[in-house]
Image 1 (tube, helix red, strand yellow):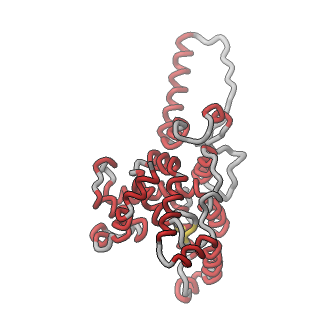
Image 2: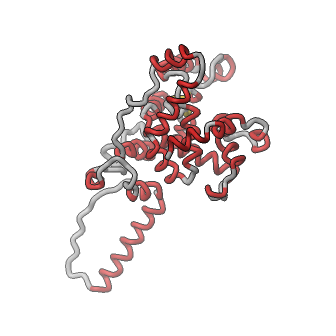
Image 3: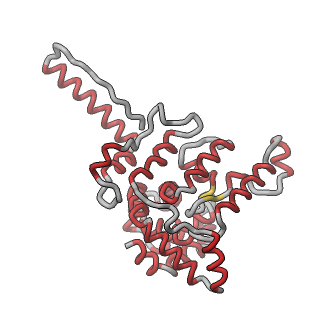
Amino acid sequence: MIVKNHNIELKDTSASEMARFRQIMLGIWRQQIEDDKNSTEMLKYVENSQINPKDLSQLNLYTSDSDTKESITALHAQTNNLSKLWRYDRDTVAWTNSDIIEWKKSGNNDYLFKRKAEFVKYYSAVIKHAAKMNGIPPFLLAGIAFTEFGGKPDWLKKGVRSLRELDWSGPDIIDRNLTTTNHPDKTSFGDMAIQLGRAGKELGYENINKTDRDAIQESLLDPVIGIYIAAMHIKRLKDVDFKNTPIDKLTQADIEIIASRYNRGLELSKENIKKNTSYGRSIYKHKKEINNALN
């Protein structure tokens, strides 16, 4: 939503004309709310955030003509602005090279699971808010965060993306027939490990170019923004099979299917997803750890 401030001076206006004017303005306002319910929700939400409610008035959570770059969509800019709701140090629980060394040195996954739980706990308020905005279970979002955090570092993924972009540098006939790597849009980034193409669709891009990928990648590398984008994508995944199912009516089997789509894709049929829901089942293997971190 683009919000602009205007000063309107009314002179010699009758009571009936004023009433009519108010009705028109209320109609415009209702339409803005209908157009972007998520923006309304984010303005209401301060109860569990780390920001002082008095500071909220100083934040511009909406995009404007002046701060929206030509290469970024309005929805992308608005999603980026959600990070203004929070005060986090992204380095506090960041997955680093030292963590990889410690994990491998331990010879088991105890260290890895401990770090995963720390990530969910640190960003638990963000996870709950992002889940609420998108109408998905907080446990589902937290479970995916737990699963995806750790592993390959983003500096390595940057190299993978560069290699893929070189391989897919055209012309089209060569890209379609002679490429040996996955498309650059399938490169995942951030703690939530979202593919650039998936994230781009959630952020309102129709066709993604290199400049778009740069902007999307930058957002995904911010843990807070990455959580919001992941929540948007999980909502889309839920709607594939359970669009009309309230979140409190979703069963464990349902959540396992939605989570498995995060790993396997939204294009597959439900029957195909059911053949392998190991990703979704893995979340419930760590149910106690995830719930403890989330709460």
